[in-house]
Length: 169
Image 1 (cartoon, rainbow, N blue to C red):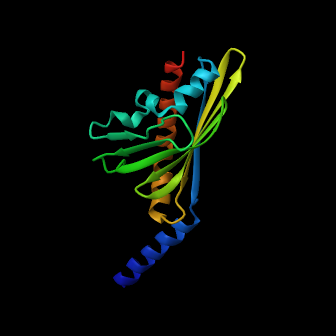
Image 2: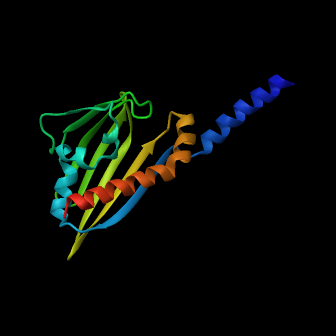
Image 3: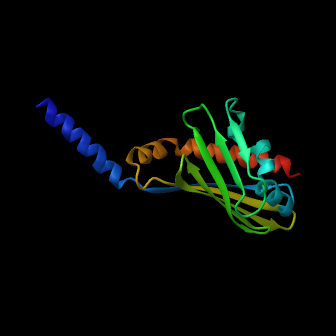
């Protein structure tokens, strides 16, 4: 009897996991005080990320930047002893000058999703949106985890946007 309960629980876990979204996008926006070109440059250049990327508070973090830090193909690699951060890579894939930046991010060697920044020029301010898309197609446990930490990720995006806003004034 106990074995059937265990088997049923495992099967139920996988079935529920399969109906959870394989891809999740979490986004937030802010009306920034700085001009859109300043906001755009603050985000685009990986050299600026240490000023606003919230994971930089990790004392075990080792960040390695590519030779170019603000062009298509630029890389931001990290290694950390913190289990949730481990090692990863962010690559600038697209840059529509003064408007949109698309980054792909990887944990280990596996691509896990992308980060998209939109910076819109409004007459007296800029409107900045950051969206993170997480791909969990092959990882059922990660689907549960993403569901549980979704609010925390949105809070992190809000914190990042506030830091970018302060830097761009």
